[in-house]
Image 1 (spheres, rainbow, N blue to C red):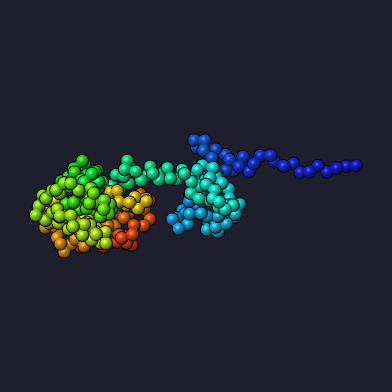
Image 2 (cartoon, rainbow, N blue to C red):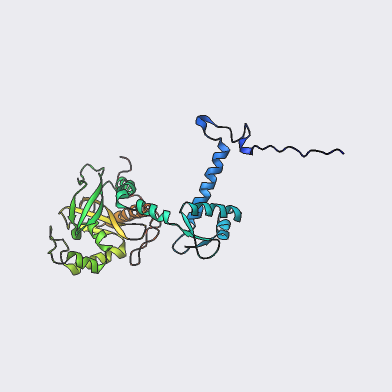
Length: 310
């Protein structure tokens, strides 16, 4: 009785066959197709994370598969891999996931003050390029605005500043943007027991007037130092929001009143707000808190009084 032997199967996987993606490239790296597979899987994993929001905190495998246009089995493997690394965690419903603790830890690092200047300064430099005026990045230290970043303006006559400079928060535009993020009760507590400094006659040293000004700042989205810190100097600021929506930094531009005129302030404020919001988004902010002006939806038009070529 004769038997026919079954066809021999090649025990090598496709990726191991010479001339295919298993052949090492220069430097011992896998060939391009294998790399594309890894990158594609990584991209799909990141797209899963992008599906989450405050309104969508639990997502099922079926939803993931439909949103990414992949099979449920592939979505299940991706979600399980992300969960195994701590980026997702299983929710109460079977086959449903929430964001994991690893993302929270990374978010805290990304949004911390240690990385604040690294994230915000590129946006501040773009603002300075658009306006020509000196730009500042500040945080609140007690009742003072502390400068942690400076970008010099390109005008010949411009404000000169430095990192480490401190100004009373109630009379600087950056400081007022930071105070506006605290709320009235916290501002009263912060400024209680001390007579606010009054560097100029324009300084808002009376608490009721200051609180009214901060309310206007929130509703308008930008702050103004109208020669309140120094005569001849006008500054426009906007808050920088963290990922959780708090105001823990602000940016501003400062220049002589001859250039930053009252008539030009609204146009300049559009630029300051735009770049402050872009910086906020880079830190993970997705919306502004209730009571604040909505974030700008589109970049502002160039300032038409500036030279086109420099």
